[in-house]
Length: 163
Image 1 (cartoon, rainbow, N blue to C red):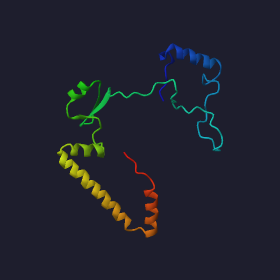
Image 2: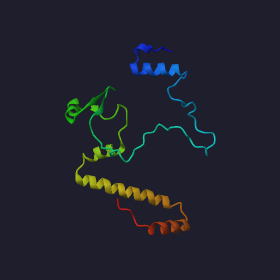
Image 3: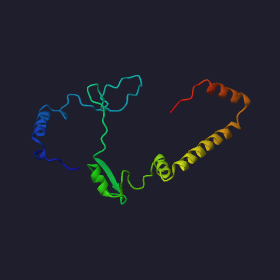
Image 4: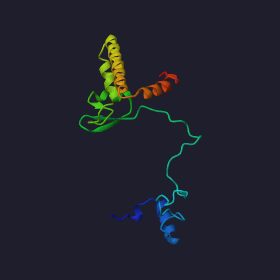
């Protein structure tokens, strides 16, 4: 283990270390935390700090900002871009995900649908709806009449969600 040269530390820390040694303590905190394990009895309160940041009412809400942004090259290197122009100047070999990361399914579907005409897109969506209904109908085959009646009563009383 490497030793720290006290003279290399900032003056504040040197003073703090000197005061701590004078008081015969190992820590400037009067009673430092020694046991950070959970209590053995679940009913006991944990009187130790959790070290989690808490949002208070005085903090402004989070506002998303697109830049700076990390981009990855196909070779595996990464860089940070500060503006949209800098991102566009990087070229097509740079992307928002590390190489080897599979793209989100929704992104793949959107990209493939964008290559189709509006009529072809409508046909794809209609075929998908029919396939989902066929899949659901096959699941009905294993149900008894009593189970079907219970499902029908439960689902027809609820209003369908509009999404």
